[in-house]
Amino acid sequence: MGLARTAGPQASGIDSQPPTEVCLTVDTEFSIGGAFAHPERYRPLSRELVDCVLAGRGEGLDFLLRTLRAFRVTATFFTEVLQCLYFGEGPMGGIVERIAADGHDVQLHLHPGWLGFRDVDWRQRVAGSDECAQRSRSELVAMIEFGIARFQHWGLAPPTALRAGSFACGPVVHEAMRECGLALGSNIGLAVYRAGDPAFHLASGTRMFENVLEAPVLSYQEALVPGGSRLRLLAITSTSSRETESLLWMARRKGISPVVLLTHPFEFIKHRDFRYREMREDRVNQARLRRLLDFLTVNRHAFATTTFAESGGHWLAAGSRPGELLRVPAVLALARRGQNAANTWVWRY
Image (tube, rainbow, N blue to C red; front, side, top):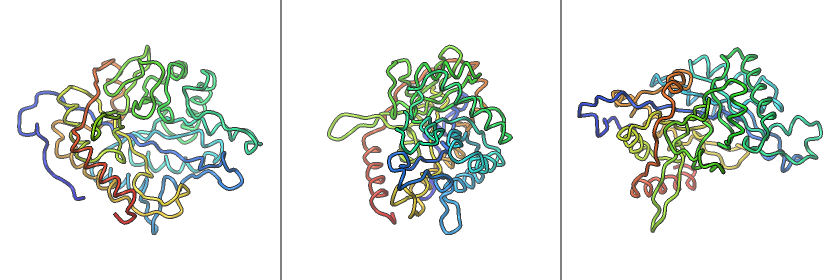
């Protein structure tokens, strides 16, 4: 699982194209943890899902921050705010303070399921939809305004970008964003959520929706054996290093920029149950992050890391940029499926 310090296939030639922009995004969120389904047994999970502390050492967020610092890479942390309705502002406030202190970009993330905790008798109620696309415009405006106020309380710059929880995006999300002055979205992950409106079926590139620019997390197609295919999201936990590097070079050849990737702090540990009571380092995912950052460092002539705060202005000025559905070779997909299966079933892999 060591680093592969090799330049990519284009490194030996003269490349006059500007570097392809690569944006690593981190969804930073807590978990309802079964509290609505079994309120008598479970409570929501907060910092344990982000800090992932093993033997006094943080292997979640702290691992991410240590690794990004070592490679001098800045990321965008889409930070969930509606959990404050249950936990208050303190727990996530301490987390974003650490993120901002390292110079990272903090943007807005919403999981509407947390709204259920507004009611004192939430244990007797059925939780509402966690999909932003299923909420009304007025509800979404109130959520965004709540998030903006939390950012102000935490001493952060006002958010300029939004990511809807579970990528549940539709026209109503953009209507609310426009009303609240948010012009950038990373609300689309086609491999995770397929909206009813085909205009939202974006695998890569960017697209303007009136005054909102969407930069989706890249979705790609993998071949299945003996036949068929399926979509996957470009994420640390779901995509092998060789697949990621192959996709980045394909995006560069096809002029697709920016390329948006996804991860979460909890992807860097393994846990035996959904309550995170027994954990260990996820050495596969930790190695994937290190190799990705090493790859981008070695190939800095071809790829430039960026954030929504840093590049959002020129993305908006450029407007819609072409994208397409990229495909990874079957041999890479097979190798990754084997590695992921071993990592899932073998605790000490």
